[in-house]
Image: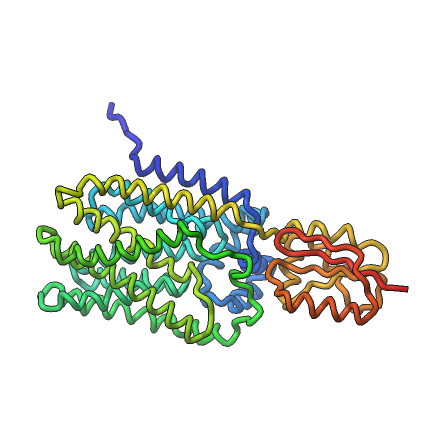
Length: 450
């Protein structure tokens, strides 16, 4: 009888799934997740109208999440189960990608990818980033196959994967622009020249297929839609900043390795150099577009560069390991990077403070007698609170001729917004009776002065 051994990659992915599940199902939902989930309370027709308000400009993740969230009922599990599944699937895909290049000791590469803070942060959130990451990894595998065996079928599969990327999270498409541009380095070879033309066509067609949805949804994007709030985030930690520098140096080293690994196949050299182009294109486009729009840089926008950056770092390690006098440094460096990632993950997970559920629960006991509630800031505040406590709907203020007003301020209410609403009610002769700060926001009870 043949014994079937469990593969190490399966053990790693199973352990990763358990750890992610513990974190995802214990940490409260964040505001952007709640907004995305609030659309599940609408009909299917209302859902698409809700999706169109999202600045992600892509519907695919929400279409998958909507029936799952309704079926499960529990908001935290319903919101985050799908990203967890995609995160584990991404790890399997990334392992295969590392072997496909190929890189030595792909399990080491996988461990660093698993622990990468940017990856962990999105893996435990009910947002489209992990689905787009999985699709990008699949597209990258198809790209490497295309440049090794260029034909129309391979180009069609690659184009299909890129189209799904755009319809899930458009930023995940950005690395593929760099893939195509950096492939021009090998234009003097017949096979690579053929691959280049197939790649260009497969890169352009998905954009044409995406534009109709973009032009339909763009005018509907809500200016009040809440994204990550920089005021609640102290920014990257020192460890995370060091990791960014290491990955940047690894990307440069990996691009250089594509010139120096003379014994490697042309497919590997072209693949490594194109991956470096993917990192460069993502960073350049995100930074330039952000500056032009006057918007802050968000880590999720750079997520598409993460797989290539990790692969290029280990390509650098492979190149360095051929130098006898420093070869022993490579495994130590890999371990140090993994430990640094784990430390950054621990810091990231412990500083999450948003909890709209706690706020919604605290509001209801204050609505006794002649009292009503005001959901501070934009119109999108109301559905977020009602998601956790639907009974608040019958207490919402229709006028201010009440003895008690309860101001519900979610964590993303700006200080100037809070000051304005408090000043308004003070002018109406309301005085502060109680202020409770919790979940990153606050509940303010105002009583009418006699």
